[in-house]
Image (cartoon, rainbow, N blue to C red; front, top):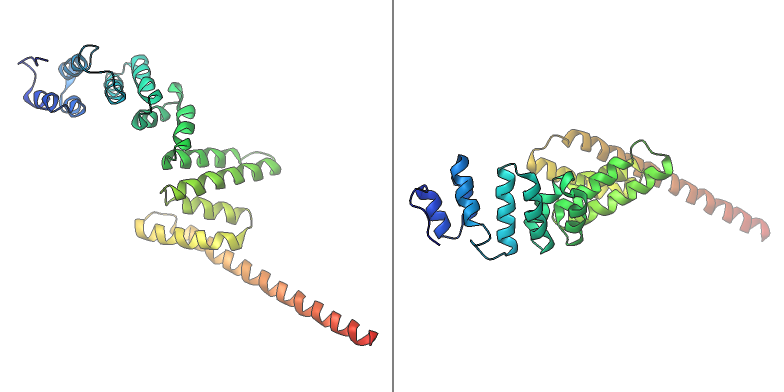
Length: 228
């Protein structure tokens, strides 16, 4: 394909290097839009998922939403992960559907997003529904954590604490605090209070259990002595 001489040098270089995504970003105004769309036109390159995705990105940059949707959907349906991720951010382009599809292939951000959706649903519902959505959120956050979203530790720890499952919450809260200390995020004190509270509640529960065990053992001893 012949590249017109009037194209800016940086766009020409990017096109010849088969890096038209860079060509688009480096250009400006109407010219860069026309140049790259011409390059990606029906006769420009093979209709591969990557080319469809790049065409969709160009349409987004040009605010041509309907065409962007068509190109990105075609790329996503062909398995292009970045196209799926792009679509997942637009509710009007089937964002929820593509978030679910990404979750099915183990995308950490999609898994975390589904956890946040379930967590939001638990607010304002009846207790039974809140418990159901909490469990759903915990499942998604655990999967997100396993897929690499370390910040899911914070959400898991908080939800377990909220459910009064203090012993389960402690290891997550401990790791979440380490994560927050390392990243410098702002929930550190809030989480530290939850961790301290969880430890106290677990300690008190163990004291009660030990006391009940001693009391039960004493009753059994007394009953055995009387029968003898």
